[in-house]
Length: 290
Image 1 (cartoon, rainbow, N blue to C red):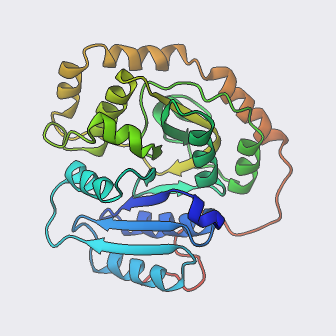
Image 2: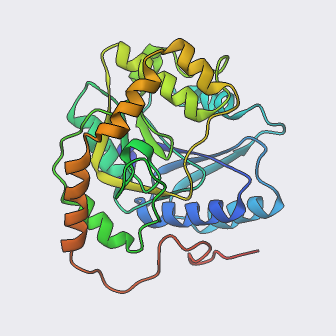
Image 3: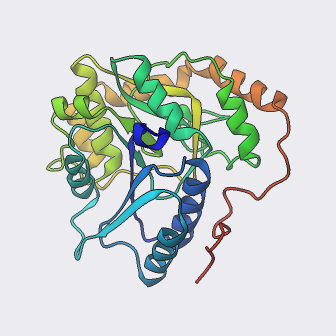
């Protein structure tokens, strides 16, 4: 079995932001082993320029990628649940539409799940990852300027896999068996992937699984995830302690020492050879602005 065949499927929901899509596909191509299965799932969001970007990328990528597009939008959480169900009990890595994965991200997430059968979700560090934001927790930090150096720093981190209040939407690897046991996403209650993922995380946690930080992986993002209207009220009603638990986690910052360790590793990491910024949109070979 090749490395690509042993890695999880990557599910990328498509948004209407063409520039974010272009940058995401470039970073995905650069940071993911050739031959990995990638599903670009479009809930009728991409416009003509976005579709052209996708078609051009499909022609030149080394990933085993497929693109599907619904004729009419059915909503974020419903669409994602449809895609996850189509993957059966397989472990699936879901990326945000504006995600910017660093090299090694998928292997590191897969290794995290393999180390502990009690882990239901593995979430990497991010500049915009809320509880796992780096270098400052709970903030929208700037995108890292030197991604190769940060990837090397992450690879040197101790593997503690601390528990998180929930998984986060910039990138998450979900154990398929845990998702199936918990019943999948509650699409009847939540319109957003943001809230549906929190709810799923809490249900899996109630069944004995853990939602953890993958210490040695990093996925950047241009912005934080957002709940749909009414989603937070529904979360608060179903999980009365959730808001307080999240606030306490952000205030106490139990990852502070771990975050500092990553900052020190980044400062001490050897400088890579000069190269193109993996986060620049439209700079992969054969790819550009229409």
